Amino acid sequence: MNGLQVWLEKKCRDGISLVENEAAKMIDDCNNNCEDRKGEFKATLIKTFLDRCYEIGLCKIDPNDNIVPEADIDVLVEEMIKQCKNQCEIDTFACVDESCRLLGAPTRINRTDPTALDKFTINISTTDFGVSGPVVNPLSIRQGEAGEPTQKLNYFDPLTKITTETDAAVLIEPIGTNGLNKYSFNNSGYPFVTMWDIRQSLTYAQFTRWSQAMEWTVKLDVPSKCDQFGNYNPDLTYNSENLPNEAVYVYDRSYGTWIQQNFEICTDQNDYVNRSNEDGPGDTFVERSDYVFNSKEPYSASNQQGSVFFEVGDFIDDGDVFDKNITITNSVRRFLKSLGFLLILMLIVQSKN
Image (cartoon, helix red, strand yellow):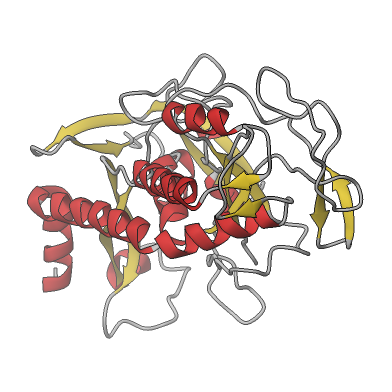
């Protein structure tokens, strides 16, 4: 057993303080990143309003006019930063073993020798953070059947290309003093389980939200004030949800035309989902398989799975974009209602094979 393996084993299994420190650093990095994105949030917010026939920086005359005072922009930006930080929670981790070739071992192993794998490889433990966390409706496919929110061990059969759910439920072990929980499976009855099987069995809900706050492109939407020709319509009327009764339009850059705005996702919302509010509203959680493509094959120029690219600005014409909405807290919702519009914050991720 070499020094690297000893350190990794201790880090993942015994050196809990190391795991706690790494989790705390991830949270701090995420919180700082949310603050650093203030300029990006403000610029995107202003552009969103201007593209929907609002005017920035004047004084409001009527609650339903198209004026957005500069002070209101600053309030909304602070709420966006607050919500971004709500996605930084990390209190789950897992130790994942993966096979690693010993230094000096042959790059090609004789597979006819049943002891070859043991002779030339070792298991290295890596630590995955944010492997679970609250997932609101709809449930993740990794949480089991509806009404059975227990994450079960799944394994992939490379021969049949079928993924099977076992009866092995996730084991949750409180670790350390900072509320960290270690997730694992008893796979003694499934000795063929790989690191990819462990990873596809966990939701990675916290890591998804953390990744979005750290890297994903932000997209905003707000009820438009534009008519079908892109002109401000001052005669709009509004329902009890402060949504326009008349049709309003937004400019679709991919088609170069004005299209009618859809408000189906505008529903009443509670405070943002977190560990203490697990029944919160639908949020930004995305299935891991939607943005990370795992491959059991070695990397090659023709096989580039296993990487995910977050690229700003390339999403407009891409048919594989995943749009996930972040909800706004009650406080900002009430504030927006007083202004006569409802804000919906969305994050977009682009992934490529």
